[in-house]
Length: 220
Image: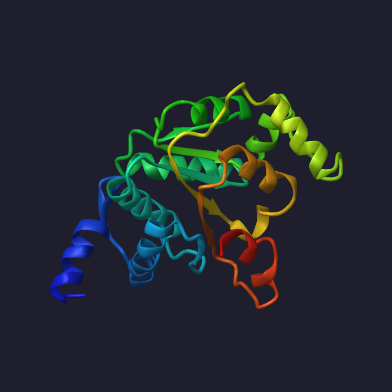
């Protein structure tokens, strides 16, 4: 830790005030940041695995701050699958000093935020909002229509000339649970092609999981 170069990195990138309490990155958080940084410059997607209770949300905060400082026109969208988690992450960014964070609580609001210039640069939302934005406010349900029908409906409901603005990086919390089927396809359709996805999970990724749509195909 006291290697000169590493200590300076920790001071710059791995210390934060969380509700007034100074916190320093643990080894797992520091090395996750270090591993992610060169891949972020190449927009090479991947997964950060932390065991439960080891500080995934703080790793997100440190990583978001680093991206915002180091990557031109960067925009970060943090996606969860439960309202309670979305509130927790939104509040965590707020208490660590990110006053610019905004929470998209509906599909319509999400599309409006994305269609503006890259402001706000930091958005939290639920994966389901990509589905509801595609269906005029109605939540997407698996098995209701085929994926092709669903995507056609999505395109028809987007504003004319819509394009998600900014150099987009997507953090997907609990990524083992939500990244399959229509909602994943809707998210990618709305956000466009040149997007980096970073999955976060505390669930062990077994060998068979790494080759499914929830990991390798979506996150590299």
